[in-house]
Structure formats: C-alpha cells, structure tokens
Image 1 (tube, helix red, strand yellow):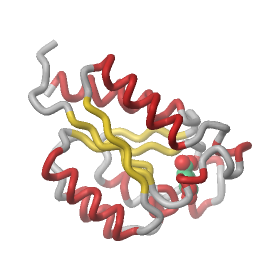
Image 2 (spheres, rainbow, N blue to C red; image 1 turned 60 degrees about the vertical axis):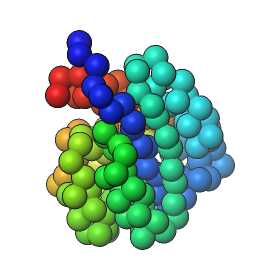
Image 3 (cartoon, protein in one colour; image 1 turned 30 degrees about the horizontal axis):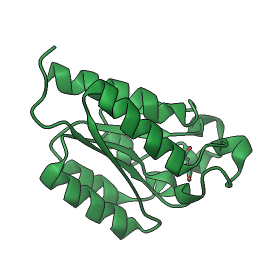
Length: 151
Ligand code: DHK
C-alpha cells in the first residue's frame, strides 16, 4: 500500500451528539463523544491517519467545519445527526469538498421513523454506515484508510 501524503481526517458530529452516553442510551449506546474521540485518535495512529473530531449543535457550525476541512483534511467522516434529514446547506458544503466522505449513523435509521429514512448527505457520501452503534466510527476509519490508500 502506498501512503497518502495528507493523512488528516476530520470526524464531524451534529446536534445532540455531545450528549452521547446520556442521550437515549438504548438507541445511541453508553459511550460518550470523548470516548469516541479517544478511540478514533488511537485507531487513527494505528492506521496512519491523523484524526481530529468536532461537534456542533448548529447547522452553520457544521458548514463552517466542512469549509475548514476543505483547507486541511484528506477525508471527512460525518454524522450530521438530525441535519442528515433536513440540511441542503450541509450537502452543498460537502459537495465543495474534494476527498472521500463517509456518512455514519449510530442507529439503524431505516428501522426508525420514516422522517429518518431520507438523507441529503447520502447524495454526496461515498459510503454510508448505519446501525453499528458507535463502532460505526471505527468501521468508517478503516474504510477511509482503504479509500486513501487506493487513491
Ligand atoms: C443521530 C441523530 O441525532 C438522529 O437525529 C438521526 C443519528 C440518527 C444516528 O443514528 O447517529 O436521525
């Protein structure tokens, strides 16, 4: 495998994900966003990726984080949370990002309410992971490493 030049990966998280661990644990699990951040940074080191995690409860905050990623990141892993189902602004921002985009949902959104079945972000995402719990972030990082090594 050839090593990509830029190994920076941004993991972006939308509204209410700051309360992971406390928020509906029967749906979203017991792990906190800080746990996910620590696990992702450690796994990133093993995979040769320089991982940074961000979260915002605001649509514009996520758009700004995507703009920032344009400048420095080789790939984006994004759980837009509720904005998945509503945000054309986040889709438009992702459409201006050149690298791979992986969409993650902790829950199996297709087994839930019908309003969670549609994703604007999926129109841009290169891969979608749903229903694997917080392990979905781990799966996304492995796939991101593969995509960058294959590029
Ligand atoms: C997280 C949310 O906050 C919901 O609004 C989405 C997603 C599903 C998740 O499963 O990670 O509908």
